[in-house]
Length: 80
Image (cartoon, rainbow, N blue to C red; front, top):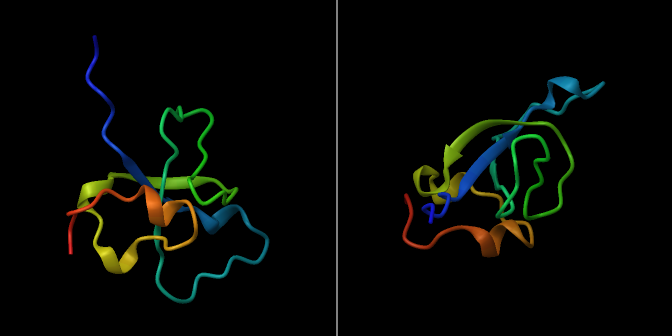
């Protein structure tokens, strides 16, 4: 039996938008459990291209997505 996958966080890649809003801080979103690299979806339902795959436990609380779905998916006791 294989080990469970570590929860992964991603950032939105805004470069493909016609007029990307790049001001302000960028937040990380939680990938849905069981999501493959070819069909990435985040817990809050945001649709976009994603970049910056990072173990969720490494993401500081201040830059975590707080939208419904992502907020509940973040591991507890992570970076602060």
